[in-house]
Figure 1 (cartoon, one colour):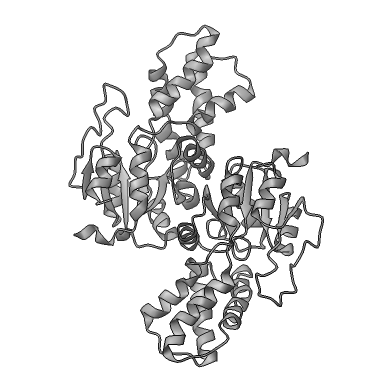
Figure 2 (cartoon, each protein chain N blue to C red):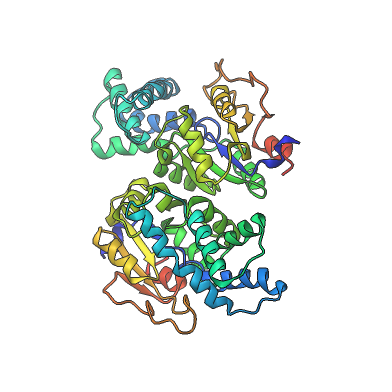
Amino acid sequence: MSLDKVQALTFDVFGTVVDWRSSVARELAAVFAPRGEQRDWPALADRWRARYQPAMEAVRSGRRPWVKLDQLHRENLEQLLAELDLGGLDEAELDQLNRAWHRLDPWPDVVAGLARLRRRYILATLSNGNVALMVNLARHGGLPWDAILGAEVAQAYKPLPAAYLRTADYLGLPPAACMMVAAHNDDLVVAGALGFRTAFVARPQEHGPGQTKDRSADHAFDVVANDFGDLAGQLGC
Amino acid sequence: MSLDKVQALTFDVFGTVVDWRSSVARELAAVFAPRGEQRDWPALADRWRARYQPAMEAVRSGRRPWVKLDQLHRENLEQLLAELDLGGLDEAELDQLNRAWHRLDPWPDVVAGLARLRRRYILATLSNGNVALMVNLARHGGLPWDAILGAEVAQAYKPLPAAYLRTADYLGLPPAACMMVAAHNDDLVVAGALGFRTAFVARPQEHGPGQTKDRSADHAFDVVANDFGDLAGQLGC
């Protein structure tokens, strides 16, 4: 079949590989609950994450020079805490909280699924997360990447084409030999238009119980899977 | 001690981690011996390797734009074969032979040593090899890198400072939190001048039994080790 040429799988990470919402909510609670704060921590995680795309857009558009996602996360955190009137953290505590994004837990099916997939495919990240963040996530969760690629080494945030095309070029492969794996329709539509093969993995709880977007594949992707085990099975691993 | 701040080890690869000479000689013999050729294969490996620095120098100096090491290896191979009057390989055979550099064996102490070192340190490549070459070497030899960094993602060949400094920046670390591990005095002198900590690992057989250069550490590096097991021991891993 047309997937025979695929040699590498390139992964979206936030939402697809790791459950950022639960992990960030847990870290926010761990910092602020002992200070007597009672908030809706998952909703605060959502609000932190809501600032993610606009912050990257300033870079994508050229309005500001390249900055790592760690720095965008930090700026977004400070704005959010000011808005919420949550204060009292010193520099070390702010940095530690910002690094919650380095300690996100993988979804339960991920580690076993990646181990199966890695027997046959090169596995690389194609995330907007910076290299250090991705390295720490991998060590935290036991993710067996062959290479950390994506936005920082491409110096372009998804969905700019360069993020995808430079990742394929680093792998020494044409886009058609790469399969983008993501829980987000938009990511896969862009990758597919650039010549990547596409695999949608459903993460209907990424945004919590009320998720409306990306509950299922809205396009004819090459593979549509329920989780990484299902993906490995469909790819014959 | 002053090594307490070190969080990442960055590795030279050709010669330090892998035995390129024996591996390349074996592949040259495997291609040409069945064609009735009898040559000194290790000497031919040396001659292929001897074209490595001049080829990179054309890029370092700006005389030609960035090209991957795979392409330099290929150009060097074609020049060498012409010089030796060794011919008859078609495109697929040339490509396969050029990829001998993707299948170099690690020295015998490497895999166990890296496993010990990885418990405590982030392990990254800081090689002039391109990403795809490094990924294939890692899969071939079972090398547990946390990240493939170095020349290609820095777009600068060692010993240009950018190769080292951009690698540290990708790791989110100041140079002083990185230790360069190499079997080559020159590499460590440059890294040390840029603020890296330095570890010399002796590979007195890299260039075969007649090796004269880099048989031992010529400078006061932070660590001088006999192999990766010794390095792990000295670093308390």
